[in-house]
Image 1 (spheres, rainbow, N blue to C red):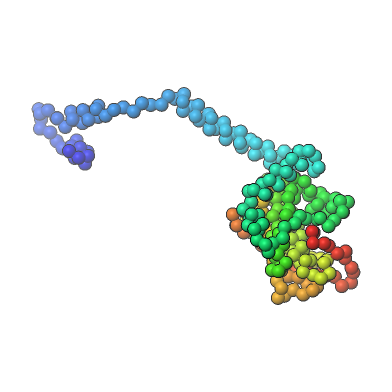
Image 2: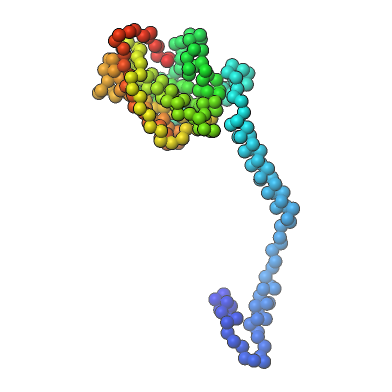
Length: 262
């Protein structure tokens, strides 16, 4: 007897006074089925307690990191945090391995051509220094293609809304990277921002690495004018910010030259 027949049996009427073997059969079938042992309620409670306890500890540590006071630049804790970010950059950012294998790109640090006193008075290397601000920046330049790819790590002190990097901080780093690309093209090795347009496409979160892809337009640019485009992407390649800008070498006043490690 198949399962469909068994389900249909109770719908059939039996003659009065006759025994109903089908009901007995159903009872025999049901009682013959082995009963699964139920787990102890205490076991389930312990499992739930462990899972939710672990989630509570993890979420608590995240909230604490978001709202705790940022580390003081130059302190022992700050230096330790920067070392940890450096290790992440070396081993956990896929594009870094790709760029280091490409001979067309030259890796360098930033602000290497500035004196220490000058760095303290610049926004990005002074007030925004340390793990709390622009915690890490590394530049990969390709002069033959007039392109620069910068890898940047944002600390929690540059947030606008909790966990999200302030649009002004993003604009500052975009401006510097686009200017860096234009200045490497200018024979004068100096220049200023004349125009900057930014479109924010997706949130940029603190505590993560992002790449800034800047490209000079050689067809429109001259020795005194540089047209540059920039895209900010996360580690998955998602586009977060787009920008275009014009950089010029002033004619009416002289500016100090900036070296290659700007």
